[in-house]
Length: 398
Ligand code: FUB
Image (cartoon, rainbow, N blue to C red; front, side, top):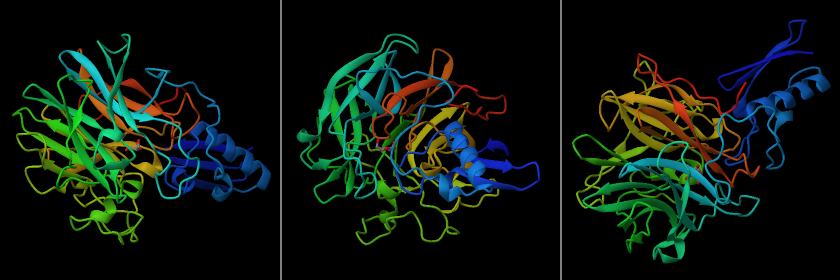
């Protein structure tokens, strides 16, 4: 029997004879939005394969179908609600109540004909609660795809902001030509209903819009997601239909970076041309496209802790939530580490909120459905160390 250890997205196996090897989790699911078995399951699969073959072979472990096996370990947190599927949680405090904006997952096709096509959401419904642990309200439909004149399909991860007596909902959707755009809808109540603008925002694009409002009242929009989110096709500020479908052909080049721009005073358009929110390593060099455990994939979010800007994001195909810190909302942000280890879902997506003196990480997995396109959201406490670093959250109890 080999001894198997796992750490930071890698499995190391070693026979008593000394024969050993390392398998990266990122070797296992080669396609976007295929399910990656959670680590304990992967470990069991690896043990079985090594026992059969006598040597390790990462290729043999790749799951052929999108099925989530029963986890060997208990979940660290439980879903907020069980009567709808709700993903990509972005939590805000409005009027002293916690509102969670997210994607309303529904059944879609089982196979992708292009990356991410199985995520077919058609409306938004949001959650709210007085405090963490209090009863959760599932609000009625806040916005429907059929009422967004410019949008054709796929209402993906949204976010919201409050200004001048109105609530603003920012959401991505594919337009009639199949290009992801970002729209804005306005409401008088935090959970909607929201009335969409007739056109998408002029110079925001791709997916996963997220708003951060700084202490001086200035709001910033962060956005972008590679592969299915198409960000790699916006290299020169316009959509390149013949651009790459993968993030970069050259793993030694700087990775595609998320975008940031100030929002205008009406909150409906950007006040400036979006710029890269650059992610650097600790030597001050941009993270590289081939650095899949650290580079940006999607779910750009910003929050502030003790005067420092914390940029959090998903690494997509390696399934981490990471964070990087900086001294400006524009960045650059220096990579610091993981916040959340891989969950039982291909996608992983987060937000950070302070409530009643505690900090929390909101995230999703596929605990209830066993399908990567039918996700549920949950929360775990987020702990800062005295030096401002964040303790890694494990979605499973060990
Ligand atoms: O929910 C659809 C997409 O999956 C989101 O926009 C991404 O962040 C990922 O969670």
